[in-house]
Structure formats: structure tokens, C-alpha cells
Length: 213
Length: 106
Image 1: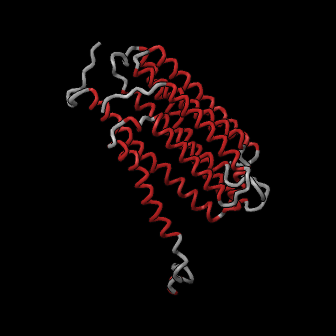
Image 2 (image 1 turned 135 degrees about the vertical axis):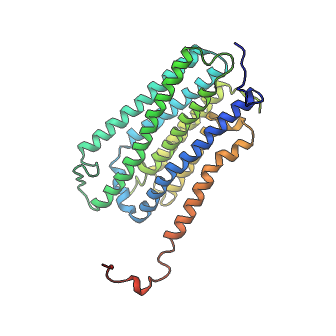
Image 3 (image 1 turned 90 degrees about the horizontal axis):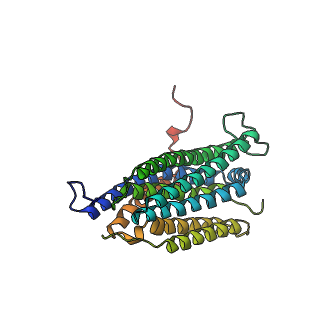
């Protein structure tokens, strides 16, 4: 199947660069979306530092760290999926997309277990919040930021799973043969971006201060 | 810009580097470095993000023009940070005007 660019493009490379550039414009808006919450978090962390240290220690560093490693692995598989698409290897592409999805689903599963632990510890703001120590109100604020940031991240992960499923279905129908794979490329950009968001969530929320008192 | 196919070995190397950086950021969190703890954590986070952007997202192999789009989000974020911090960090510099102090108007 020979590949032709859509009529508004000179050639296939220009079409690919346009898709790629457009995705980055969207990702810039995502930077601002998450950036605003990160910024509010940093501001209150400066104001209520001790409470944020306490809140951070309520989080499991091992679950958070494991989830970071899992996401980094999923990004590797996504990169390999794009590579398979570039080489025109459809079976490999579908396989890597599905592996990426499974790894992403494991991330969400661990995240769910974490949330369940917070529920048992009465650490969900507004739902019988019952932090035992000092500064309970300010620790609750920390947990508000925690649930907004990780919750919005999880929503992005779920959307990403939907995107990858659609790509896998299209790939099995042979849509990405003959050198056309732009949707895989920009779907990958989205997946990697969500990974980057977690790369910042992890140190900011889980590693506020782990030494001393 | 012509298409550049990155060999999988590069992806594996980047992945290994990312996991090492993750180990480093967790390990450093347990060393008492004072204020340097947060500096180390954020520096490592940016290092990981740059690795992902350059290699997994293939920005390294695209036209230079792409870097403008990649940096645009950070640029606008920097404007938001500096203007808002300019507010919060200078609020205590001047006393509140006396007519602002007192009871709220009914």
C-alpha cells in the first residue's frame, strides 16, 4: 500500500511534523494544567512545611517508588511500540501496545491499593478525615493536593489506556502499514508525558522530608 | 526533517538510566542533606524528564523548531510562577492601609 499525504501537505514528512507539533502544543497546555496545581502545592508546602512533612510520611514510599519504576517500564514499551510501527511490524506493534497497557493497568491497581490504605487510615479529606497527630487541618490540605494530583494523573492514565486500546485495534486492522503511523507516534507522546507528570509527583509528594523529625 | 529511527538499544540504555536515577532519588531522600534534599530531588526529576523528552519522545531527532514548542509550556509556566510568587513573597513588605483593617463592611 503506497502512502500519500493528505492534500493540504506537501509530503508525508511535513504531515508527520504537523501532527507531532500539534501534539506538543496540546502537551504545553497540559504542562500549564498540572503546573498550576504543582505551583499551589509548592506555595502551601512553603507555608505549612511541617504538616506537609507529616502528610508525606503517611504515604508509602515503596508503593510510590514501585509505581514510578512501573511507569518508566511502560514508557520503554511504548517507545518500542513506536519503533515497531516505524519498522512496519504490525504484530510487534500490537504486542508492545498491549504490554504497555498491562503495565499501565498494574500501575493503576497499585494506586488503587494505596487509595484503599488511605481510606482505612482515615486520610481521605472530607470522608471522616481522622489524622491522629498535630496540625491535622494542614495535613488534610496536603492530602487534598495528594488526591488532586494523583487523581488527575490517574484520569490521564485511564484516558491513555483508551488511546492505546484504540491504537491496538486500528493496528490489527492494518491501518499502520505502508509507512503511516502518526497516531502511534503522538499517542506515544501522550503516554510519555503522563509518565513525566508522575516523575514530578513522586519526589514532590512522597519525598518531602524522610530524615530527622 | 527526515525520519530518524532510534535503535532499541538506545531505549534500553535510557530506561536503565531512568531506573538508576529513580534509585538515586529514593536513596538520597534518606540522607540528611538539609535543604539540599529537595534540590537533589527536583534536579533528578528534571534529569529524568529531559531523558524522556529527548529520547522516548524523540525530540533530540526532530528539527530545532520543535524545541520551541517543547519549551513553550515551561515558558508560560515560568511567567505564572514568577508573577504569583512576586505577589506572595512581597505581601508583607508594606503595611496594610489602615482603612483595610477592622470590621468587614456589612
